[in-house]
Length: 368
Image (cartoon, rainbow, N blue to C red; front, side):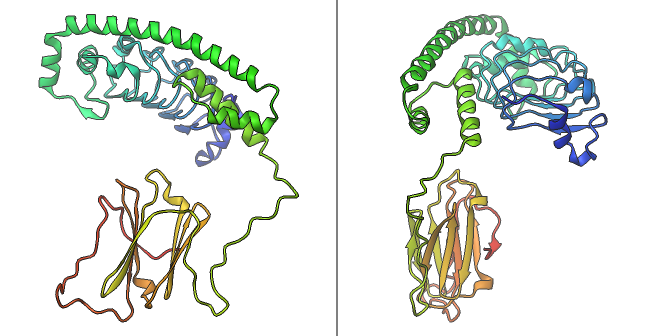
């Protein structure tokens, strides 16, 4: 796995002319880092440290960062909150989607008197009864928990039943620890059995078998997945030299007429209005917009979906420069509005309102 090196830090400090001694903001996200090291000695002026989406299992080696105000450790393998009490300037701590089951470990943040925001969303401890009441009582200095404001009445009500809530929390985290210890043994045994079952298979079959099998949500599995992913990137599957080359789709006929093509096999709705065409593609919600491209031409519209082509021929010419594209932030659907060149407003409904996607992102002109 990746270690924090001087070369890596300099690579991520281009905004500071690669000077790491005076660095105030550092982002080391998605590097498969397993251990925090060297930062407190090399970058003592850090105010913002982003370590999300790594494989860090323990909070350590940060106590010299006296100026640190924001620490992001979201999506890691942390199970206990510790070793942060000496960060006297810390204002915001993000521990989203870790494996924190020992809720009483938040008491280690009592001395962080500047702490105002704490995010624990997605951790096992958030499912304990009285979780919120316990945290806002133990940490009176915070004003937000899980991006939700803490009112004065919330704190007063939480303090009334604190002793009973604390007992419940202690019981629940003890039960969780038993389940977690059992999970460790179970996952370790499963990984060993799977590795033994795959050892006689070809490399590609081993990889396919690994990705096809079901797995538990645990730190051990996350580490194993990261190792497999890293290995697959270092050794990409070789293509068969005898395999026929992939055939490019034919977009136009010999006469220049555009064909209708749906390579990504995506569902869509097409509406022919008197003054415009509207194409709604039921794009997968979590598909990054960077993987989409839209090209509107007078007699066809083409949408690229992760290098696959969706093309639709149009019966009438449209105004390319006035075409608009929208993406719903809720459903992910893509809506393309194309005004007709010789369109007419319907007499029955002169306003003829166009369709709108729920929470659509800001409209943009036709782009390719």
